[in-house]
Structures are given as structure tokens and as C-alpha cells.
Length: 459
Image (tube, rainbow, N blue to C red; front, side):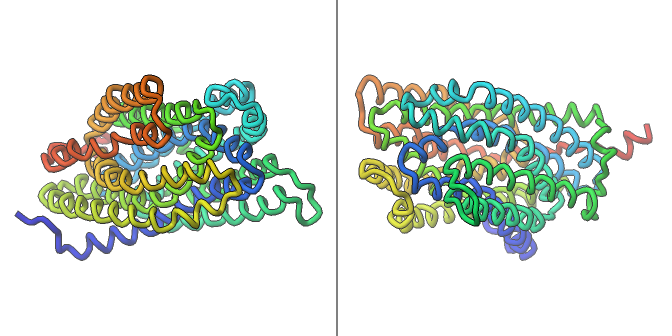
């Protein structure tokens, strides 16, 4: 039995996909990070306000990521068959769902920003600053949905660099406008947190326009046209819902878990706890982008290989990918410890926030090892291989039957310290490694989800 593949094309494809996807994800994160760091000079309440208001974006991102993943799972398998017509229909379906959901969140954010933020914190200054930010970035939700789905469509057919270039342009726009609008440069008034939100709005809209224009006029693989937005294949719609619904459900469960994290950590009387959560959350996102890129690359290769019917080859690929995830996880843990001090020093926050941020960073350096192996393994192999329901069931069980009860007990019965509560909130990242190992190596997740569209058309 071969454990590690010697297929040079596998490693070549993995690297060529991973690097631009990781960089694109990192740059997309950089737009939020730029807001966070530049606003960090305004103090704890501004940092906390942006972090809490971004929980609405967290909810949106979870659903959009699920739509992206569903599109890439089905799209990459059709790409393995060299059949692009179904991919065009899948793009239209994903965009409709994404825009509809984003519009709903936009309306809620515009009408009830204070109510939403008050769920996470009682600090009136944080509520005030967060509401200002949320009302403006709410307008970006639809643009974000369109851009990310279009970029995911490119990835499903192995066009990964274009998304990187588009997000890079958006980052340059965001950082430049942040500097001008937050601090009042080039004749503009200093707008503080409002300026950061306006910069994000302009950069997100620009990103959506660039991604859409590329798909419509420059892409040569998909041949997507405006008329494709109007056409819905009912059979593919059923497939998208059937295989995508568990993915969406899993992301909603995970979003609930993240919102629960914020609610629990925001319940501490010391505002430094939620500020520290924001800081370490940004560091976590920055480090984790590389593993997400590797997982996405592995997912595309998995879908393409299974779509082509090469199941024996996929088993060897899966063993190799697991080893890569474990190594990347260990390296990521070391990186967290290495950058923790300089990263935290970027923020002008209270001594309490700095202390808690250091504690959370040390704990995360351990958590990220399990997070990378099981999280990315289940996403890049099991979910991308066609067994979309398993990950949803697994996350649901751990979140609602392990994480939430354990955390509530530690927080309200034991009155545990913030670091202990933080570890309870993230303990599933380590516990799920056992489940992931047995599931991945059972190989019962390899399922060809494509249809023979040629025969169906002829019938």
C-alpha cells in the first residue's frame, strides 16, 4: 500500500493552486485586517466595536463560503469531465442564493444595528462605534457575495491567479482609502471608524465589479454570459440543494459557534477580554489563510480526480494530503508563537487586553494543529469528495453537545478565567482529530456527484 504519492503532477497542481488561493484569501482578510489595525490606534472601544459589528459579516461569510464550497465541489467534478455547461448553471444558482441571503442581512443591519451589537456586549461606547461601522459595511454584503462566488467559479476550473490579482487591487484601494479617510489626509476630514467603513465599501464594490467583468469578458474556460444569469437548470438546482444544503447547514452551525464565542467572551466585565479576542482572531485568520488555501487546492484536485473516476489514485492522494495537513499544522503553531508579540504590539490597547491576547495566542498555537489536520482534512477531502452530510453532522454534534455545554458550565458554574473559557470554546478542534482520522481513511466519502449531461440532453 502506497502512503505518499510520487506523482509530480499532483504536487505541481497543489502548489500552483495553493499559492494564489492562499494569497487571495490572505488579501481578502487583509481588507478587514487593515480596518482593524488602523482603527486600533483609536483605542479599545473602536477595536471592540468593529469586531462585534463584523459578527454580522461572519454570519454572511459562513453562508457565502458554503455556497462557494458547494459550487467548487460540483464544479470541479464537472471540470474533471471537461463539461463546463453545468458549471455555468451552478454559478447562476450560487449567485442567486448569495445575493438573496446578503440582501436580508443588509436590511437587518441597516434597521437594527444597535440591537444586533447589544446581543454581544453591554458597553455603550462599543455599541455606538459598532453601529456606525455596521450601517455602512452592510451595503457591501451583496458585492462581497458576488465577488467571492465569481472567484470560486474561477477556482473550480483551476483559474486561481485571477482571483488573487482582483483581491490585490481591492486591498490597495482599501488601505489607501483607510489612510486618507480614517486619519484625514489629502484634504479629507478625519472620519475615524466611519472612514474605515467607507473604505471597505468602495474596495468591496470594486472587487465585485472586477470579478464580474473578468468572468463575462476575459475568461476563456467557462464562456459565461449575462444570459446565463437568467437560465436555471432545475435538475442542477436540485443537485446544488441536495449536496449544498449540508454544507450550508454546517457553515450556519459554525457561524452559530462563532457568535456564541463572541457572546460568551463579551460577557466578562473586563472589556480587555473581547478586545484580546479580536486581536487574536485577526492573527488566527492571517495564519490560517495558508491552510485554507491548501485545503481549497486539495478540494479542487479531489473533485477533479473523483469526477474523472480515478478512485485508487485518490486514496494515495488522501494519505499524502493528511501528512501535509499535519506538518502544516505544526508549523502554523510555531508561527503563532513566533509572531504573537510583534503582532499584538501593533495595537494601542489596554494592558489587560495585551495580557489576555498573549494567553489566547499561546492556547491557539496548540489548537491550530488540530484545526488544520481535522478541519482542512474533512473539508479538502471528505466534503470535496462528495460526502457533504458527514461534516455537517460532525460539527453539529460537537458544537451543541460538547462545546456549548462545556463552555457554559466553565463560565457560569465554575466562574473560570477567560483563558479556560477560551480553551473550552476551541476544544473541539482537537477532539475532532480522532473522528477525522478514521473517516478519511475509510475512503467511503468518495462519491461522483456529476450527471451525464450529454445523455440527458439527448433524452
